[in-house]
Image 1: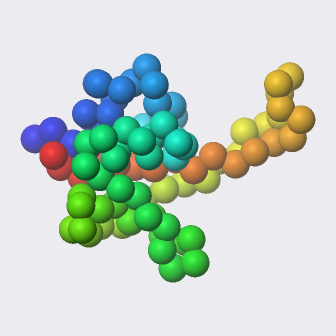
Image 2 (image 1 turned 45 degrees about the vertical axis):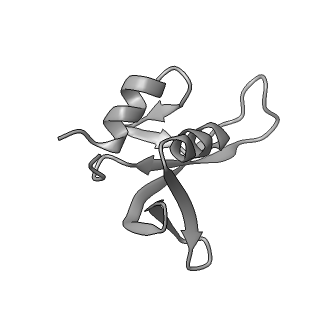
Image 3 (image 1 turned 30 degrees about the horizontal axis):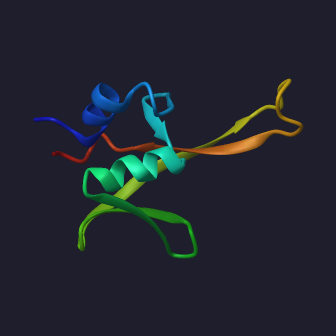
Length: 90
């Protein structure tokens, strides 16, 4: 069975950022998910990420935060949230 992560990698792999088997939370991901009928919401004081399809709550998304060290283009290090959308079947 196909997962949401499979669809994102196959159809939108050139537009989204993937790292460590996860996809980075950014504006492009949110717009892509909305196009597919999904939505991500932060809950419980922004400590949990929940995936919705329409009004139906599909479940909590496992995530990990990584720090990207400063480089030539960035002045300071920044944090990226990597989401694991592979448990969600399409």
